[in-house]
Image (cartoon, rainbow, N blue to C red; front, side):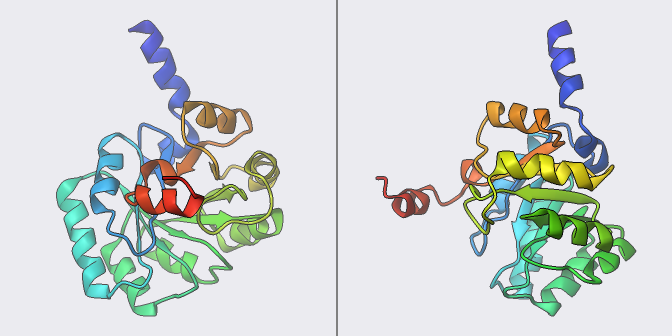
Length: 218
């Protein structure tokens, strides 16, 4: 038990303290797919589950959020992006007041302030140092450094190169590493680079067959 307690202490990062989670792990949102059960399972394991809002009717989104809240009393994130951005869906998100609102692919503008006004933390995905500085100026609470290995939207900088660059300018904001991370070794590497946690997508994906076809495997 003594060794187990030591491991738990190491895993309690700034990200855990801020999000009130016990494992410094976040599941990526999965576009238009229904991933409520995945998000609930991630939350139950002590990490942060996420749901996306892309190309779904607002009423359907509200049903997903209600179902997730029935399945877990743990915090979770709702994700938005500018392509396409739905003002109606974002307003519904503000009314739902999730623990975290995440955003990627661009300058969030005053959306950060709107999130803070309802008590939600803002988690911004960045792909280079310039985007990091923009996110900081906007007031983002958590920065996700998303490397080129990421399965979704990603930039041209490798995760292992990008993370320390982002850490160096993020100040006291927790930095989360994303892209090519799928196990404990990847988590350990991210923590060594100064990150406070990781995002995993493919490892949690509800569409494994689609991913295999995309990568040429069967």
